[in-house]
Image (cartoon, rainbow, N blue to C red; front, side, top):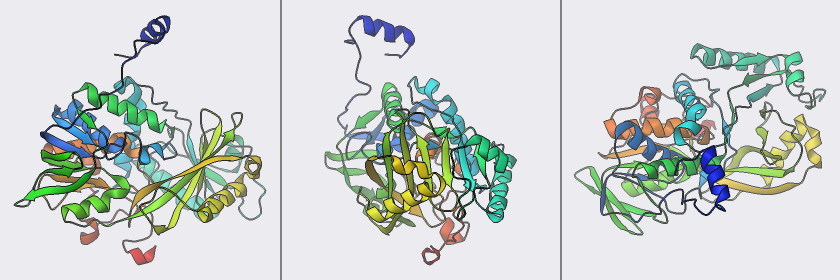
Amino acid sequence: MRYSAFNLVAQTLRGNRGWQPVWRDAAPKASYDAVIVGGGGHGLATAYYLAKEHGLTNVAVIEKGWIGSGNAGRNTTIIRSNYREPGNIPLYELSMKLWEGLEQDLNYNAMVSQRGVCNLYHSDAQRDAFARRGNMMRIHGVDAELLDDVAIRRYAPFLDFDNARFPIRGGLLQRRGGTARHDAVVWGYARGADERGIDIVQNCEVTGFRIENGAVLGVETTRGFIGARKVGLAVAGNSSRLAALAGFRVPIETCILQAMVTEGIKPLIPGVITFGAGHFYISQSDKGGLVFGGDIDAYKSYAQRGNLPVIEDVCEGGMAVMPMIGRLRVLRQWAGNVDMTMDGSPIIDGTPIAGLYFNGGWCYGGFKATPASGFVFAHLIARNAPHPAAADLRLDRFLTGHVIDENGQGAQPNLH
């Protein structure tokens, strides 16, 4: 069924009894041309673009839980392409362009809202760093505006500009950034993939890989062996676990990233705002709740729950720039397990095993990259060659020294 205003009216007159399931809950077949492990946004987008762009429809997406049960349903919905490094900018800008046409492409309301993303700066040195980032963005054709004191007061007059500890001097604004509804994005890609014949297999956990003569033959799962000529891994915080099952290591550590939402209030936050003197970011949902998050927990874990010290740190950052939020009640808190690389940039590449491909290491940037990640990963799997937008995101870059140091922290763990 194609969604339209006409169908909405027709179903209303029929008492909404004619709506069909958004996708099939498929049972796994004995073999496929390709299997994508991970039913989050990246895995489903990969399957969708394999079918749409490359004509590969004998494909399965296998998910250990249900669609949307992982990080896809646990993020803060921010989309942006305000990156600094040449190895990252093309990928995230491709993603932004795909976001801008996603709802028409999928015929699904993903609630994409380009309300802007503004990174606050608090010192002259930070202003200069943001200016350099903005210049790099504009060199690559990405929109960026450096706001001064007057402009930032006009953009967000509710901020605490007179705070002596963290005076707000301005901000770097990307107006094309914003938010998208995370659940709707996953459901839209699942529906689009299903329409093109992709099998979406839920409650099917990978327990191992069948490998002979250095090439993958398929995956062992809790629902039996599934053969495949090609296998793509898009499992976020479980990347190192799956890689270990296949017999190789990845330069990734899994950490917990928390977020929370307050009770609903009238419209206040114009877009997404980030605190420059700490790790705090905030936006307002369509239901009125303020959604905010910050830094990862200080230890490694595969759990999907966080701890109070980080919540306290996040709230302190928020109170430093907008003390008024201290009057709001936090309704709920959640956490996802994120795959952190040592240079803050992702990996989309083949592996030492023929026919096995890897997509991971997204750090804080996984959701915003969803469309482009799927697009370039599908290109890699279908053609066995990297897409130009992801050519630098190699697995061996830490070995060769070609790091994409988006974090500015170096390529060694002891520099964190």
